[in-house]
Image (cartoon, rainbow, N blue to C red; front, side, top):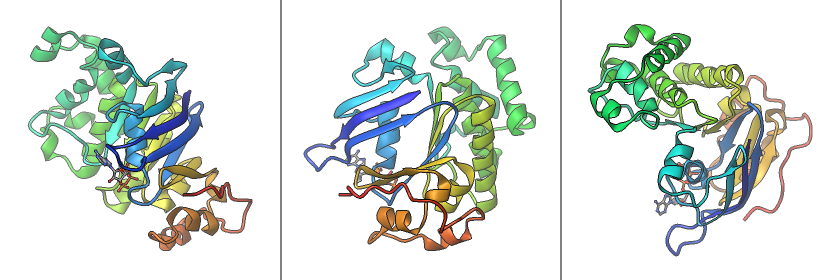
Length: 272
Ligand SMILES: Nc1ncnc2c1ncn2[C@@H]1O[C@H](COP(=O)(O)OP(=O)(O)OP(=O)(O)O)[C@@H](O)[C@H]1O
């Protein structure tokens, strides 16, 4: 379980980017984090894996506090947090298998890491996962020979090789065409349930958030102003999150499951 409470992040002396954010994610739910550019979505994800240092507050993963961890304890905690990136973050000159095995770097010793001699069970797990996402036949290809969707599958498998307790995805489909984006969203959704893994996805595409996740969290100026089911993410919620900033209305209208009149939105009105 992920429990974020009163999370504050301030860069330098600027106004805080995250303002006492609370979020609790249980079980294998797939949660979309939406919000206009600059709302604090990436900062929130990066505070969880400590790529960004929180200013104050608490982030607990399965009961263990992540804030203020240092050195070996931080490295141990980080290997339980998988991250998928918009730009894939692969090493182009390495093979798919080598990139995937990089997900084990937090577990092997220095000699194994430098010589890339991974335990047999890691290699077997890599093949199993690569088969699961349809890239096993590319194992020995260079990463830069793959298409965007294939590269993102490599990124997903690399994150899963960490045996994570949570998967964070920062705009995982933003560099992909619409069809490939949907495939990746579907994949993340299925993997979450197959592996009983909570998945947090920062996403600009509201239609995809509504279709492929079971909960939407909306940020505006570093505060959570919506937390509810996709069916409740209606025009009022959209306006509250993006109003006066940008209005991706066409995305809402195109959503196959959009039900603008159903239910009460989970909008709160304490926005900044
Ligand atoms: N390293 C940094 N130093 C200073 N300010 C930063 C830094 N990283 C982010 N910010 C600022 O924090 C705010 C939130 O940025 P963040 O990237 O978290 O937003 P976001 O919602 O993910 O936006 P986008 O959708 O454009 O990625 C922005 O105003 C941004 O300029």
